[in-house]
Image 1 (cartoon, rainbow, N blue to C red):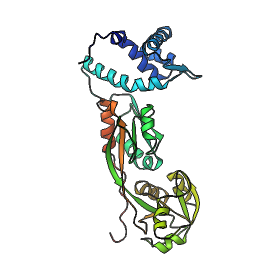
Image 2 (image 1 turned 135 degrees about the vertical axis):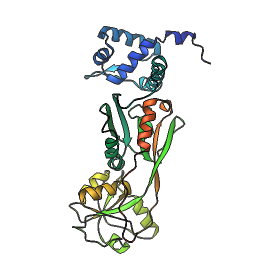
Image 3 (image 1 turned 120 degrees about the horizontal axis):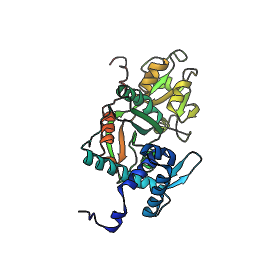
Length: 312
C-alpha cells in the first residue's frame, strides 16, 4: 500500500495537478486560467510550484501559448487518468457518458485505414454533439512513439510495433486487391497474370522503391512495370481515374475507392498474404472510462465488405 504521508506526496497539492492537466489540454496559460475560472497570475504561480515539484520546466513559451516538455508528456500519461479516477470517486460519476461529454479523441492510422474506418466512426458518433474525432497520419512503426508522446489516444495499424507499456486488440483481417479504371483499362475479371503484367502499375510504398508485389513476383522470376510511386493509397486511387494503370492495395480501402471513384476491384492473379489490423494504446489509460468507450466504439467498427467476385 502507498504511504500517503510520504514527504514528496504531501507536496503534491491535487489542485496543482488540476492546473497541470488544464495546461496540457489548453496549451495556453490564458486559456487554462479561463477554463479553471482562475486569474492568469494564479495559474502562473501554480506552474511555478509544479516546476519546483517535478524539477522540470514542464511548459515552454511559444508564440501561440505553451508547449509541454518531454517530461510533461510523460507525467500527463499518469496524471490525467489518475485525476479522472479521483473525480469519479469523489463525485460518484466514475463513468463516461458520450451523450453529454465534450471530448476530442485523436486516432493514429494510415490513410487506407482512415478511408475505411473514419466515415463509419463519424456515422456512429453523429448523434453525439460533444464528441470529436481527429486523425493523425501514422503507421505500424510510428504509432507506439505517438502514443508515448501523448499525440494520439489510440493507434490502428497492421501488426503495430509495441513495447511492454502498450496494449493491443485485434480488430479485423484484411488482404490485398487490384484496382483499375474499367473505362481506361477494359480488362476481364478475375484478372489473369498475363494481363496483370502487361499493363503499367502504380506503386504505393514508403520508400518508393518496391512493395510486397515485387517480392512475390521476384520469387517467380517475374517483374512488373512500375511507372510511378506514391506514399498515399488515396492518391494512387485518384490517379487511376486518369491513368490506364493498375494498383494493388488493401482490400478495406480498395472497396471504398472502387465504389466512390467508379473503379474495378478484383482479386490479384497471384496468392497474396492476409494480415490482422489491431488497435494499440498506452497501458496507463486502459481503465480510463473515456478510453474504454473509445476502444469499444472502434472494436465495433468494421470496414465495408468487398463486393462479391464473379463466380462466388
